Length: 457
Image (cartoon, rainbow, N blue to C red):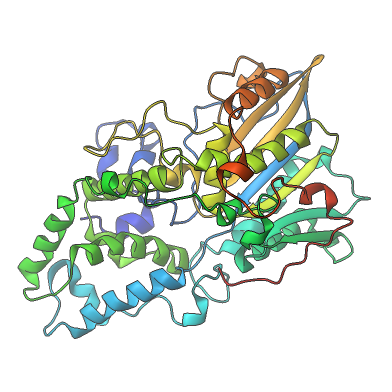
């Protein structure tokens, strides 16, 4: 099992001090592979993408002309649905007729980490959580970093415009990002929030276009996903029952404790439930999360490329304009569909379900963690323009187009690739959408007010 002290003292590293035994100095050890956050399916706190070692600095003899940012909200509490399920698991523990022993002995004095049911769906803050992973604080820091990085693009005489879905936590993330970006200059006069309704009536003019897609079937590959080997859950349960006979907990409930581990880290900064699993079990559970993402809301689903296309079309339009900063906040699922449509993260083959694939080309925690941020940069190098992507603080070259400075893609080549990729895509027709087909709020917000009421999701 992974000792809690190892998690706290080594940054969630699974291997403890033993990872240093075969090298002369700690800095020679490749310890990031043991970080459990990489195997929590994006539910745990923000983690940088492993990347390829490419510098994130603007390439020599190039200048930055535009940046588009799309960000997930910051670290949060569980959803109401997950909270309800966790409560049922907690009841199992509370009804156990005996004293917990062995790995589960901490449950004798354990207090559930969500102290108020009103916190479900909410972003973590210094007021409602005590750990170091406050979602609002992380977004505040991100805003300050973004301002420093792209200072040359910001005109202080203009208002900062922030586009967000009307999810309460997405809006709150945008607000704290803006506070970090503007610093002491933050005021209602200096920032404008464009709050776009998540309702299906918005069609493609939305940051959540999946809700309007009638033909999206997330259960399309349910039978395929079910083929994944989950006997590791039986092994975990058998291990616990040796010390705690009569504990009536199912393997599905055991599986939920990986998610519990992730959310408790968000709230408290640690979780004793993370101590219950071996390195192999974290890897197997993490891969199961990844195949679920891949086949339900990622490239493995036949409709995700279609659903993300209005946002991709909007991005291409922005790249042809002179506006310099675009800021957007939405959910991980919508970012996933956008990147699927874009083709930035598209494994050459479907993820296998009969084994854990190494290397794993679709690690959700690397691409869509809490607080995920994708930068699309337009660069001018000599007399040509280029585009590159920075995914969670790591340069991520566009597949098949990275021969430009700093592994960028020449802008016209990029346009050709995307148009070829989406030539047979028609969001309105293929999704049978009743509402608008195109995303227009980036341009018509000055004339058409987008001020949807905030919702708790």
